[in-house]
Image (cartoon, rainbow, N blue to C red):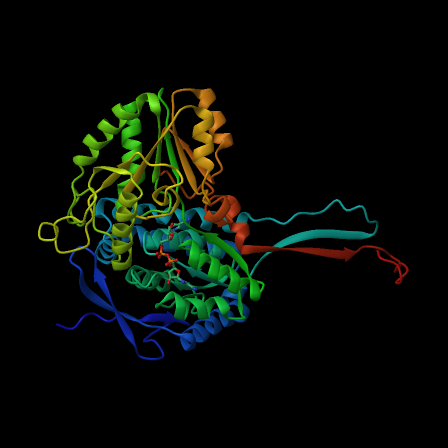
Length: 494
Ligand code: NAD
């Protein structure tokens, strides 16, 4: 049986890659290929950036005002809402995440387009009360030009929305490159972009591998900004290449987030928080609470409760609503997680749950790994320091607040942190002392279009979400108009 063949979108036209080449994308639940994706290269990068550049400079988009852009974004939000179910099914098929989570995500997605659509015409310049006599000075916020959005596989449409909505609200044009493992949802979403009425070339979607089309887009001299979400190593490569071209960047990278349980926490709530931090999305989230710091006085009791709860997690077919743990999305990720489980064992940590692949026969033939909990983990072990991006939890005991802060911050990352306590003093002080872009107290894994998201340290540069994120896609211009009746001495700085 031949597989459906998808096409890329460049300058308002659907077409194959210039080379005509394709690659297979598989269903992580079955491990079977189910669609063919264009394998784009430098020629497609050139065509996509040229189309975006032309749309920015001379197309109807250039003459569109901010209120009109807002209306287009809101129309796109409506179309997304109408198609949320179909898009969720695609995501499940292509990346293996749970239907329950993907449906919640695709139903939530329109909010990004409504929010930034609403914000588009509220970005105001200022009139500067300048010290100079005889001049009128004001500021304008202007778009950067052609932006490139590079997206990973774990939440393809959600992470795309974090980039696309503010970039378009600000008036930029864009080239989107989804992950080679999960390209289909972006291509299907492209149909909605067309239907919403965005002029040709405003949004272009190309597919393929990071080192091929991804690198070619980042290097292209007509690209003004790269908005990247992905791993730290690829992020560093993108940053280097962008630096050579003096381009704007936002980088949303990895994490090794501490989830800290104090002895005054409501333990049942904290257990759910720990589970949500590491086993939701099969641990394949940048904000995974993969280091669970537990106060020594409750350590054993807490681990018992945690293991008992985790044991009940229902693994299986991600397209069923009752499933709680799905497959691992990509083959390299599957191998990486198993390698880290072996590393944890060799480092001397104790496995109290899981620790091996799940029975393939029972679980659809796909890439399943049992939810795994290591205890007796020291914070210098590799399983405590390196991002695993899978259902593997390292439990680390601590004595008091001082030690909790020291261990929590002893990482190269700083994306998120969780704190479980009933003490308001402790909550406020921990939120202040933890070096992370997001701190959750008595909750975990909450994100919203309204609230800034991003990393400290090696977890990233810049912020997405929230009103300020639109400025990541704008540049400020200062305009001086003379109101003087006489021209002052031309040889002296005014
Ligand atoms: P990845 O870095 O392998 O790939 C991400 C994207 O970058 C893909 O589209 C890939 O094709 C592209 N890419 C790779 N190398 C490139 C290069 N040299 N030039 C241009 N593009 C390149 O990451 P992944 O495995 O898809 O995703 C998992 C990683 O993403 C994890 O580290 C995770 O923490 C991170 N992540 C971060 C956030 C966040 O918001 N901070 C969110 C989700 C995922």
